[in-house]
Image 1 (cartoon, rainbow, N blue to C red):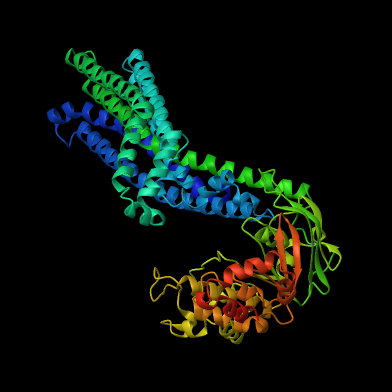
Image 2 (spheres, rainbow, N blue to C red):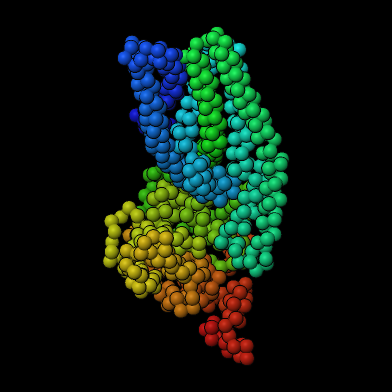
Length: 610
């Protein structure tokens, strides 16, 4: 991957790794040469041949020191730039893989979603990015080359010392790697204790749980549980490994110290020259630095490798979903069936059954439903009746377990998914809050179309958000987040109205189906009343599906469907269903009772249902 994203940077990094490893070893030999000529220089002076030779060797030593410094700086810069390119390439690959499946089942599956989080959470921390491997592996390779080269030089003093240094250094590297791998696993929550620690930390630090933590006085309890588990993890998981690593480091240090003493003794007996002793002493110290460098980069390497492994698992999991989709005929490949200006007649659910992955209980069970083109249909029912599931199937987020959906008689699976979705505009209850400008947030309804400012303003006006946008610091150019300069935050109701404006903008630019999933869930009473008043205008001529628990919205639809047990239990207009006095009428009266005067219940109810 490094070669693919940056061949020049890869070559520069590899070259500077070799140069940075060879230069310290060469420096040891040069320093030995300088020391070996020190006696002649002292006796004959700098102007003698020995003095001039010593000066040349000293100049070479200075040059090698400069090479070590420059090579390290260039390697750091090149590997950092290479790492950034690798990270960007990996993130693009993960985004491609996540977006390839037609449906969203892989995003709602907790196991796959946890893997996919590698592209959001783990890539944010520089300590865990795969791109750091360009730097950390370079450091590891440098350290290992230095260690081996130092052992070769030391073997010139005595083979036994070279072998001992290599064995001790290799043992230290192994133990450091084992400790680093265990710590990386702990960081990534692959152990039960680590997952519990992450959960407790999230409870104690996230804003989502802050209210309950404070109202029930859980802060101290969570800290105590976290501390207890952390101590347990240190004792059970991490403590034994550092002990072995410390023992290995002690042995390596002992080999170096014994080697220095051995060299000093032989030099004192004049069995080796001062120059030779200097070379071997330098080699021992250089080899020790190589071991230390490998150990220092070991944890960073293991963390980055752990991220890379999680990345590979995430891509494989998502690609498995995409393959399953293709095998089931669920593809994004453009089909020969045209979808422009559809539906013209109807959308039909024919004996549709559906169960979510991992569940055997059907949410829809033999559903037959017709949505006439150009008309509005409201869907009501108790929680879990399958209302939102119908929307997901219609948008091809999932495929039916049995049965089929058709558009003007054409099976929806024969239609290009992306082309069909361009015919659909939706306002979801949990609409995405895009931290873009107000204009961009609306035009996201048709991102590839040229910006239509009059259309933006028209959509905002019809959605009831135009005045709020005009009051922002820079009107439509205001970033919708206080984290940006000149930005502003919106309320939940304002975000929902902005989502409606985005859907209306998509309708103005070609969408034929409008989906409103709890469109008034976050609106205040005044905004909700305004939505009711504009409902007929907003849905005129569109194939509209409304899901809502608020019957003041539902009653304005051309037709209303009551779901029960995954099937249609009742269907008709508001007046027809009230006259039927079935499940719909009961739900309507129960909701209406909250708004009527208890002293005149019959009159209030009559006023609301009239």
